Length: 308
Ligand SMILES: Nc1ncnc2c1ncn2[C@@H]1O[C@H](COP(=O)(O)OP(=O)(O)O)[C@@H](O)[C@H]1O
Ligand SMILES: CC(C)(COP(=O)(O)O)[C@@H](O)C(=O)O
Image (cartoon, rainbow, N blue to C red; front, side):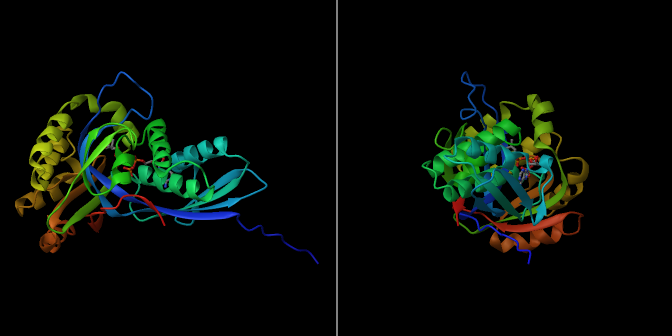
């Protein structure tokens, strides 16, 4: 009688990273160009939706398989994940095969930090499953490096590592860059309409020269006032300077502003967002649901990425 041998994984671990919205940022020009020192300064907030990643580690063979929401990922859709896996494979004491399952509950490519959340949740999960001697901070640094290498983000990983409504006051990976969290007195909700994706890689390559410096000045102002209203107003000014409040975002942005609700466009996506006190959530959602796109109503994630 034929028999099938199904090998059980030698280790399993799961981690979560929140998604993240950047309102404005700048890319400091630094003399040292190591990936851990590269990044952005800016401001944004983490949301309670993001990516949960489970890894199943097997002995006796090498390689990997990446699934996104249950389907095998094409290499171009899992570039960041592959970079993280390759890095762990290189430094592992013995060869392994890993099955990676990303459960994604944010749209990919819409400025909600999916690439950073994929890298960070995967790095945390692999670090735990492999019993690596690296600290969580070092695992997060590796995720930052993946984003820099794949050109999918600059300050997203450090923001998702920290969580909350944050100012990224110094560029770089977790432990090198600096983050200051601003506490929100009321319970605020993020109301987000995802209309169309924008490739971060393409945008960073072609459009950033227009605005460098502006994000830094805005950050200085936010550091003084620590006001969520100022954050929203400056985010709008930043997105508007980049021409992002036009096109598909124009009508929903105008409708929210006409209703007296400050809003902006997430960097980088055709994604309109606002942060409002809980009592105003329905009003903002009612305005946005008249437009095409995926509407998300989220809490702010104050904890940052974590092993589950
Ligand atoms: N779960 C994932 N696993 C691996 N790579 C991912 C994942 N999600 C996104 N990416 C990579 O990041 C790219 C999108 O990144 P980006 O344009 O920065 O979008 P976002 O604004 O959602 O972070 C995808 O095309 C893919 O290459
Ligand atoms: C704005 C961005 C450069 C990209 O963010 P995302 O498209 O969400 O990956 C971010 O990493 C930042 O530095 O603030």
